[in-house]
Image 1: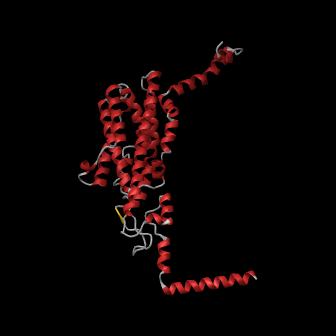
Image 2: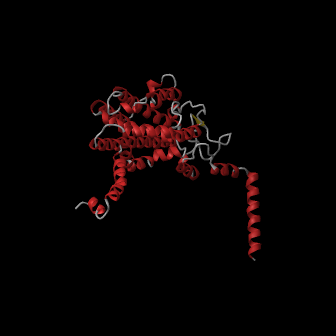
Image 3: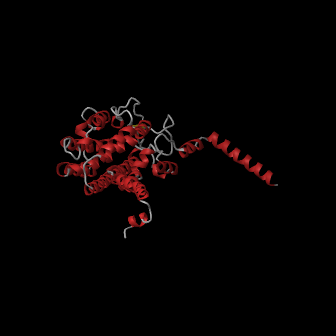
Length: 334
């Protein structure tokens, strides 16, 4: 005897109907594509949010060069995604989710690339290895299994609508980008008045797609692949950030045994530059600050202390102060 029949045994007919309603509603709800995606990608979503690159970005620990690389990856990703979306805009498995005016990001990313790289940005933009693999998968899906394109659109657009404004503010603050939006147009959805309401509409459209359970499960599987591709891009960016930090240590940091005239690290394009003196790696203060991601704009107290101690007059005062302190301590201990 099935569990369902066991729970209904001994009930009057009306009670059986009533008791069956929540179970039926729950079954229907869990069969909704939006619910399947939410539950089926939860682990991948959490892993993506906890990649080092994302955590550093949210803390504002991002260099302009790394932000440019991240924007470049987005440009190639959305160029591929929106090319395939346009190709399949009339396909019954995707047509209800076609919102080019509200969602498409390529034009905004072009404006960001022009701002970040300059007029000839296309000559400088290069698709990284991890991004290339992501792009290839998007094209493969769009051309051979258009119903799976839903997974890539869902993963990217819903995430952008959810966290875009937060990331925009972080980038503007950390990189001193204009509050008028230059360099962060990607995060601005000008034709979406209410992100929460639009996401509800999008999920309702997904749930209305005429798909069987097997296809829905394949979409969930593809969404997890999309998260994996994004994590590979994040990890690649994290490696690029580590390389930038290493190059800064070797070539771009000022000496630790003296301060610049203005008392702060000299910078160029937001990165510290080297003044040709000393070995920064021997300075424990800078090592600690580098670990905290707070290198830019810091000054080295050890260098300042050494500079003070080289002055004979101040050496005498320091010696007198030490002697006085020792005398007071001896007196207090008697």
